[in-house]
Image (cartoon, rainbow, N blue to C red; front, side, top):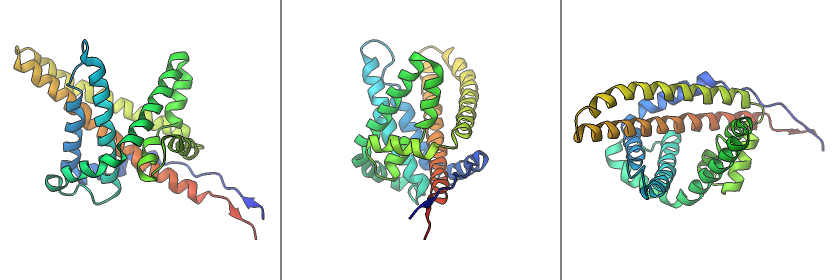
Length: 235
């Protein structure tokens, strides 16, 4: 029989952000631990032969941090960070490779788009925005996760672009807030500069965790809207 298609509903960006802040508050300690893990990984090296090692370590730890964040956002995980963080990391490891590869594919595609023309890069950023979330929550392969993100974002890409811009402005605000104490700490020789770098990296990691929380809620809402608009068979 033929099917009747319904256009997907519109994403409520304000509701997504509100849900993300509520989630952050409810499991704050767990997310702080995750953010510290993510931020401190970037301290490995930024110069000389350590650059490649630092990039790979940041990507690897980022994949684990995203798995932890997505699972904590969608379930009871993380209520007691003191007892659940290490087991949560261990439970995340089996999903590491597909999530890492998905994130790597997205990064390569977006970078290529930005290299040739900025507009294709922005378009790919929005279209593939929830790829890693699909990989984690729906147990999809990297290629399937990319296709799933393309499917779910269709019809809401302008709103998702707005969400990306909001997160970008938030990131700039955090960077400015951290820059002042970091600069002051850098005045003190030796330990002061180190403290400044650690503080900046920790703030960056915590912001990365919040972005993952936001994208998880966006994915859940996009999936709900997609399922509500699925074609209904005509009998």
